[in-house]
Image (cartoon, rainbow, N blue to C red):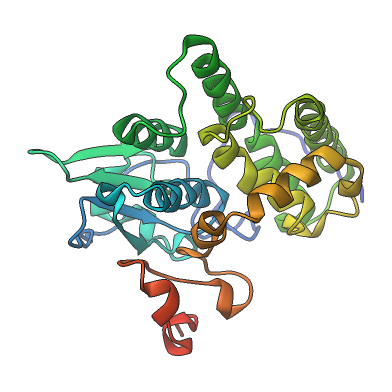
Length: 291
């Protein structure tokens, strides 16, 4: 798994569009839109533009949990942004998120639309808006936000690090795989030790910290993200597995994981969500990949 040719960096790096890799067609060293395309707007107060990756799932799980609690103002339209096709570089999406990453939320419940980007910021915005899943007591709030930002800061080592070099890089190389596997396992151990002493990540209550962490770490131990579950010895993290199954038993988590999803069995995908009845009335034609 090691490369026989050592890379020597040039004095000044230049962009080589033919550098390869699964995401070479959408990765670039500059920001801004590549084409004009306005975002659609549905009838609900909350407009979500996303794809069902772990970062997108965080938000749809929270929205479904809010609706399950009876917060009717949390009704939302979830529009599919196909990141593999570069939808995130359309002018409308860039206006909602200048970083061109999913998810992006436009909250139209007030007199002026509010854009919110970065998944952690969206979780905090919605939790504060509806007064749910984010404690108000100072110590509990600090613990919840600490674990939320632990996920935001550390998980790129899993997706862009381990996941990329193990599953998506054009060639497998020993050093980056070993480096990011070590860090991924360290992070799993951090979470496993925490969950050995606490029912949920931030304490005795289910919070946005769980919703942020579950799509990534639950994905590793339950859904075999990147095909590396055995390689990571994911079965060793028993407390993570216990917590993962506990959240997966929640109907709102199952629904949230379906929204804007493009991978897996067709029955697990709901490409766009505009009403709660969409989960029952979706058809196979609607679920079929665009061709």
